[in-house]
Length: 168
Image 1 (spheres, rainbow, N blue to C red):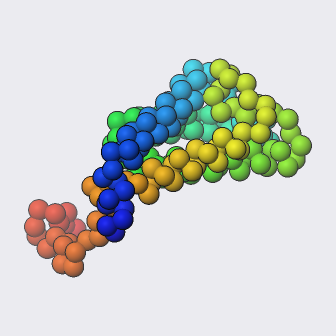
Image 2 (tube, rainbow, N blue to C red; image 1 turned 180 degrees about the vertical axis):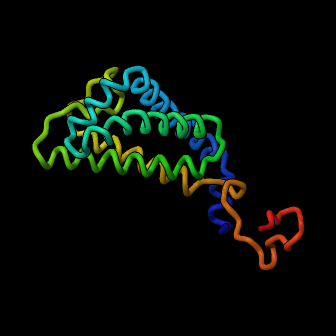
């Protein structure tokens, strides 16, 4: 890790900002997940309105996406597996934004389904998603040294027959 990143992550303002922004994204994802999980049939219909997937895929997504949002929200809220949660946040926001752009390009005037039936969103939501992607990028690049995976040192693989070897 460069000394620039280390000093940025060590600043109290950045640390407090990270907690607040991580909490914000976690709360959004948790609210969205719970709202969708409470009425998966309605969420499935909202997905179907995009006209991107056949019904069996749509029905599966109506359960899978909120469950994934719930996992991401919990991880961000607790600060566990933050790197993975941030990657999934970026992936989900990109997919959601792409679906919205596809709907707009085809002239569909639909509710985005972002928060299930609890909040009606009929306008263009991509500016909000873009802002959330920027926040996700900030969280990613301002992570501390302890949250980054470390490259394996040469010879760090377990020797055959040791505890780390599962044997075949």
